[in-house]
Length: 215
Image (cartoon, rainbow, N blue to C red):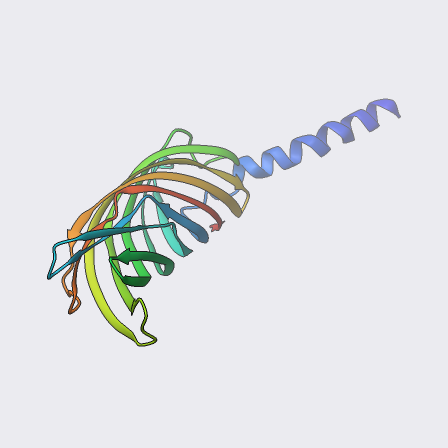
């Protein structure tokens, strides 16, 4: 009787391990993340006086990604978000400027994992991404002593490179991801406002927390 119970106990532990070893390895990941980009500078140069003012603040939004895994340790994927936004207040002499910036990020991502995807568990990685950050800014100008406001816009498409590292935690057909990155990218505006030229300095750091399906 005791031997029978012991055998059943061993089988109860062995079967899940056997099933995990023999389940088909997932080749795809698809998910959504909370994305934050910090350190990016928005520099306005007055076209008349040349005076410069700088706005800074985190870009925060939701991102979506797809990733294809090759040879169990390498991947190529796509990331896209059009939902990042921030608000900045700067001052040029007697003029108060509120800047609302909306950014769309699109990138092609490459990752190398230190562990294969044949088992559940932690999958640390290093990677690089190439893409663009398309920014559109609405400037609301208010002069001291006046109740009248003026709206102007600037726009730019900034090529960016991201060096990234992090890890995935795979749990059968789903998982979570924690990702850190260093972003590099600078460009002058493609569309300047009537009063200002803008310089977009997207160089900074990124962080994202994601959930995904692994299939």
